[in-house]
Image 1: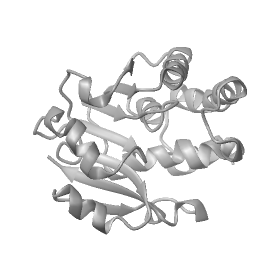
Image 2 (image 1 turned 135 degrees about the horizontal axis):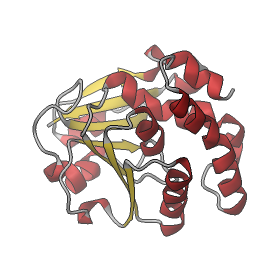
Image 3 (image 1 turned 120 degrees about the horizontal axis):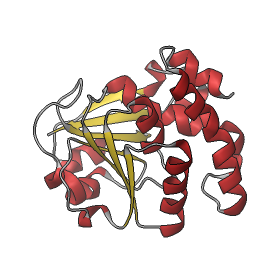
Image 4 (image 1 turned 180 degrees about the vertical axis):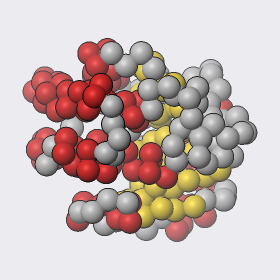
Length: 208
């Protein structure tokens, strides 16, 4: 399962976007040989378990041109890099506290020519900018994540949903959402993409 999986769900990609998605496989394979960026058991499933999974955010909310998006705990660049390919007019800040991982994200963005991506080595709570959206993938529990970044999100609507947080999570989230103490809407990714991998995966949206 490779780029055909991406093209199936996103059929209107430009030639440049297709080229960039196709380049992700070789770039991450090369980096994974040096640094364990992606779990070894997932290396053959990059496009399903990392790229397409990241793009579930885009099936819930499409970012407008100029939207400012913060990817917290991006690791090697997920979900930020696939979203930056899909939304070249939006601006993405990828932050991670682990230096070797953010180095991978920065390198891949540079190799792909993604000039709408800025990679930052540091903690999310220390980033001083303002954002329209915060995205994350299985970084930490929602109460902690809200504590780090909620006050960095501006009210408004820089996409198809009002500004807020869009978090890729899995499993039973009832207690976690209740503990966050904020209004939330949960989207089942199994309703967006086919495949066993997505059966328990969700996008949690918290509007500002």
